Every structure is written in structure tokens, then in C-alpha cells.
Length: 307
Image 1: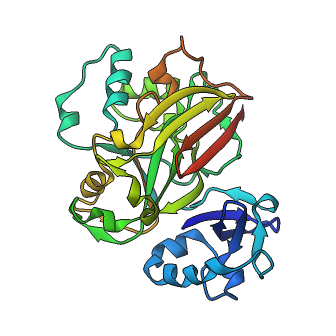
Image 2: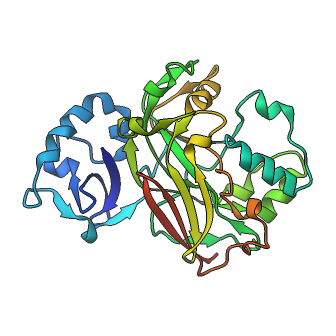
């Protein structure tokens, strides 16, 4: 199943089930209020709600609560996650980004999957403009995939971790590289360099829909990024060094994970301007259109505007 959050032009965020990429079922309206109206409630009780939502998939475009996708406005599919941890799980990105800064790979990276907490209150959706932070000159995109936790647990082993994943979506971890560079020289961060926006969407795909693409430690899903229509980044999720199961094991060590938390993969190889270098493309500027695409997860578009 593919789930979206959308505005039906009444100023309210609604929970929708995507139907054939052309229509959306307002789950709450179509069920006469029996089913949830927001994504977080669905994720929190997905084991109860998903079988009931499956009964709505046979609805036609003439039924109550079914809308053309063209007449609604997509929002961040999970606009209010409980938290956002972003990992550093693609080896190629880590190696290249460090080499560009004159740094060697550190052996500790191969010992544990590492992450940082980012601002979970600034989630942006598809087509939503991204403000370049004031005084930022080095704005960057990051091509990532994220999973959404769908089950509460602590000390989760990697062998059972997949049972805790509700679904996946595209993630763009926007980065103010000049802010980030300065603060990390102090030995902390990234903090303000990541504080202003994170894009997710356009929808969340339930984990069962991706099982057929399982490969290595991820899924065989091509990942690309374009700026103003020019292809800059190409990678594949199957190249993860650390699986999401390993990330969940690490994140839940001594800590309870709750439904509605987001875990990011970190940047795929070639998946940002920092890694590609300025000879390939300048830093992002107002007016630039950034398009991230992952097979079977859609396309996430955002335009940069002045802060």
C-alpha cells in the first residue's frame, strides 16, 4: 500500500490511500469515521488498521471519499514524526566525502552504525519550497531513503528488526554545508547545518511491497537526483553497508523506539554536491529545482527559495 497526507483544500491534512497513481481514497471519509484521519494514528495501530483499509481498495472513482490526485495537494506523508535519526550507512559516500576534506576513513565507522538526531519538527513535503537559510552560501541536497518505525520495541535484534518497519519513503536531508563545516570543527554537529528543513515523500510505501526487490543489505532500487533537470547523482539502495535492521538494532540499544519515528539511511554514493565537488555543480541557489527519485518510491521535488 502507498499512503499520503494531503490537503483537500479545506486547510486540513487528511490521510489518503493512493490508488493506481491517479486517485486517492480519504480513508477517514470513505470509512465514515471508522478509520484514522492522520498518518501518525495509522502507524501507531497499523496492525489493526491495515486489514480494514485493505477493504477500501476496491472503491471506484464514483464512491464517497475518492478524489483525483490532481485535485489535492500533497504534504509530507508523516508531517509530525516522533523523532528523526539519520545514519551514515553508505560506504562510498563516507569515503568520498572524507577524502574531499583530506581525511582518511576511520576504522570505527566499520565497527558500529552511527547516527545523529535532526529536527523532526521541520518536515517538508513534495513541491514545498525550501528556504535557503539566511547567510548560507553552501546549500546542498542529500539523496536518502528512510524507514518509518511501526512497532514499539527496545533492544531489538537485527534478526527481528524488519518486523518493526512500517514502510519506506524518499528523504532529502538538506544541508547548509558552510554552517556544518564550522560547527563540526568544534567537535559537535551537524546541528544548525541540518536544522532548517528535511523533505520526505511523496508517499510512504508499506514494507511488504518492497520484499520482491530484496538484495544484499537493502533493496535493488535505483536512486537518482537531478538539479534543474540535469542528472547529477546515481546510486542504489542495495549498496548499503549497514542494513536498516542493523540501524534499528543500534538505535534501540537500551532505548525504546516508538511507532512514528523516522530513521534515515544517510546519503547514497554520489548523492550530494559535497561529494560530487564544485567542478560538477555549484551549491544550490534560489530558483533551483531538486528532484530525488527512487524506484517504486516515486519522485520528491522541491524548489529552493530565498530565506
